[in-house]
Image 1 (spheres, rainbow, N blue to C red):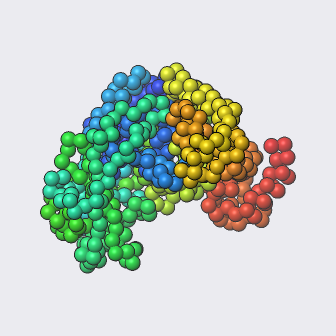
Image 2 (spheres, rainbow, N blue to C red):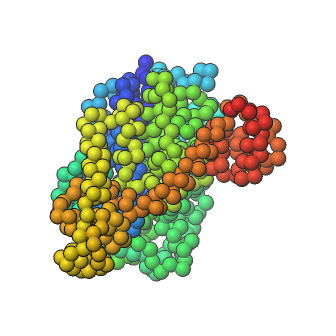
Image 3 (cartoon, helix red, strand yellow):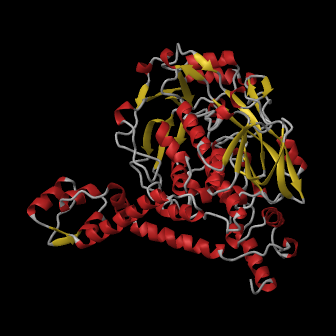
Length: 619
């Protein structure tokens, strides 16, 4: 008997099994192919806009993705570094081989965790409670909790041209029976689609005709706790090329030959990561589209053609690749394809990621309708934590929208549902100035510590940083800068106005043109880099941050207004039929949650509040 069984060894499965094992739960990770654990079947990267902040949040809570990305990246950079702190985010090119190997080692060396190679055929459920699983090899395994993290393997089809065959990424055997088992248990399954571009042999590319894209010349890390250990000079470059008129015409002339436009594909694909065919058809006014040539491994010979996901037949993929600058003689080593797979209706989940229909059954990752390694890992971590907390008879972990992007992600899934693969964007977070890359540890480390995933070493690093922030804040408050000739000459040189008399260092830092390094020069002291960054951001954006916090507090007031579990929405008068149906389907636990359900309008909320006040006056 296991405490928790995790089905699937992708990024969600890794975080789910590690978190539960580290919380002292006897855990089994069962996956179709151990060699494919933590695989990156598509983009060889971790992070990106909003996603990089999610990785920092995973790390702050005690997850593994950030640490593993730091160990295995080939190049790293900060996106939007010239913009405000609310949209800055890390992205790295990862070595696919190293990333997977490191994660497997971590899993194998984790106490309380076993790994088994098999596919799950059926869920064992009694009285709407999970009891175990049956595998395709015929084994029955009992457990208290199950977390399904099957990624794109659930009843998967590979599509290219007019070909459609059963298969997971890399042509692996898909999970063919688990989907039927879930349907029999009453789950609504839907069909989604994603895709991947061709790979080309690296020494067949003419790089001189492409633009070189380098990593940052500053040490960066996803981990909030450990310093970077890589060599800036040894980072591998990426390259940039473009589609052109020839590429576009080839696609438009052959749409009937691709799986996407021939009617072969049933599933809905991700809006924010479209195939190249979709780009050309939907954006015909664009003369060209960016194509990124990205290394997949340090010692490999394959280059990922980013932005060129396609379902064209192989012969046309050859022509399309050769139509682009720098790729005229490129040799394709792996052809692009689309993959269709089954996912559940995410509104059938609780905020803990436990299913509403089956007690003890959790789902995480692409089975919930998300796209991306980072979104999957975040859900896996939360599912693992909540399954473990439930077994410990403790309160669940539910992150709010003002606490983490992870909270935004899960809240959107449960309350808004999905019609296409969901991707996190900074625009989805109304409190993004609070949910920054730089303060992920400040927001979430105490929570990670409380659930038992932040060890003493990490906690000490975090507490030392907090002490440094307080010291620097106090020092800059007390230290005055004189308006003498030397200081004023320096201020004039950097484009700032002169000082008359004396000014508090913190007050001077409020000037838009003044950076923390300018303050360090004026006071003649080098400050702790991470801590001083916090002081600088909190000083410069103080007014905006306070305004955002007030808006968050209004939201939290609504979150405190509980909705009884036994409420009968049929008895709530004067609300729209759609609102009644959505409220019944989602069954929100608070008014705040109800306000974020698609199809529930302010007028419906008003009527709901009137009903609650009358029928549940003491709630």
